[in-house]
Image (tube, rainbow, N blue to C red; front, top):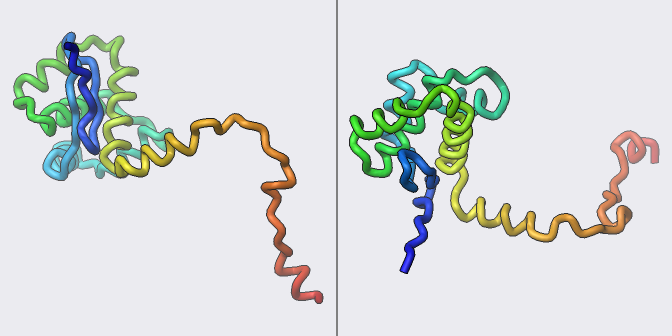
Length: 142
């Protein structure tokens, strides 16, 4: 009977080194990243979301720290990430972004957003969503 691996609460599940591996960032790993790089975790998240240029070493370190947070020892986590060639850096960046988003968005919120997206392509009457408010300028003249 196959067992399907699931991402830990607040973390992700990724294929690394030929295996499906859990990753999670806890406060200890976040603080370690900030100390090591002199870069705040929220600044890093903003870079990953397009408001800057994240460095490959930052993304690689976040992935390694995510593996450590899920229980892998430092040396093994570093080796797994170090063994990935530069051609994998885009994938590593995506993993780092997913990892940070999972850390900062509660699992219930992710489920809610996924549920909200289900069936979102249904057509709606444009007038059904039109706001019926008056501008302050118009109310001041009345």
